[in-house]
Length: 329
Picture 1 (tube, one colour):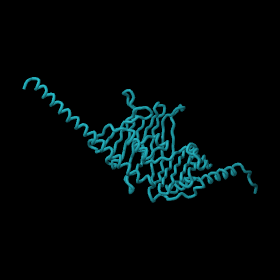
Picture 2 (cartoon, helix red, strand yellow; picture 1 turned 120 degrees about the vertical axis):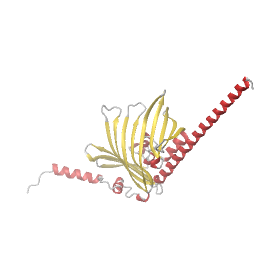
Picture 3 (tube, helix red, strand yellow; picture 1 turned 45 degrees about the vertical axis):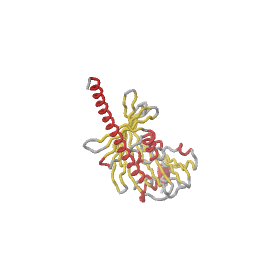
Picture 4 (cartoon, helix red, strand yellow; picture 1 turned 45 degrees about the horizontal axis):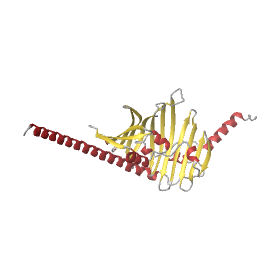
C-alpha cells in the first residue's frame, strides 16, 4: 500500500467515525424530542380531563416596579375561574383589594353562556352595574378575561392576562411555532429538561421546560429567555408545585417573575390555587339575570364574601346612625 492509498484509507476511517458520531448525536436528538413530546402530551391529556369542568379560586400577591411609578408597587388579587363545557358556560372574576379591607374590594366579573351570550358585570366598592348583554364591547370593558389556570405552567403571564391561556395556545406554541432544540435527563433526580426556540415580538426566545419526576413529569419550571446579540436575559420564569389528587395532578402554587422587553416592568409574585373538579362544580349557575354570580363560588369555596346589596345597606345604616338627629325620650 503506497502513501496515497494509506492517506485515503485513513481519511475514509475518519469519515466513517465522524458519520457514526453524527448518526449517534442525531439519534439522541430525535430520542430527546420524542421524550419531550411524550411528557408534553401526557401533561395536556391530564390537564384536559380537569379543564372540561372545574372551578378554581386563586389568591395572588405581586410586587415590583412598573412605569410611571416612583416607588415599588404591590398588588393583592383574588381570581375565580370556572368552566363547564358540557353545559356551555364559563365564568371569570377578578377582585382587587383596596387599603380599607374586604369592603373596599373591587370585583370585575365576566360570564359567557350558550343561551345568554356574554354578560359583563362591574362591582365597585359594593355597588354593582350590569354593563351589557350580547355585546362585543363587554370583552374590552371587563378587566378580566377567561383563562384556564392549569395551563399557566408552560405559558407566560401575558397569555394568562390576555385570556389566551388555553390548551389550544399550548398546542400552537409547542406544535407549530416553537422548534425543538435539545433535551436532557437530570442526573440523580430523573427530571427531564427540554428546550424549544421561538420568535416572540421579533425577539429570539428560548423556552426551557423541566418535567419533574416526583410530580408525575408535569412541568415544574418554565423559563423564557430572550437571546439578543449573544446576550441572554430571562424575562418570564414560572415554578409550579403540583399535588396528586383523585382527579390527577393539579397545580397548587405558582411562583413567578415577569419582565417586559424594555425592562421597565419587573414583577414577582405567588399564586395559591384552590380547586373544585368534576361533580364538585354545580352544573348550572343560579340567578344568571341577577349579575353577582361570584356569590355561588363564595359558598362553593367557603369564603366569607359580602353582598353588594348588603354592603349598600350597611353604609346606609351607618350614615343614618351618624347623621340622623337624636330622638329625645
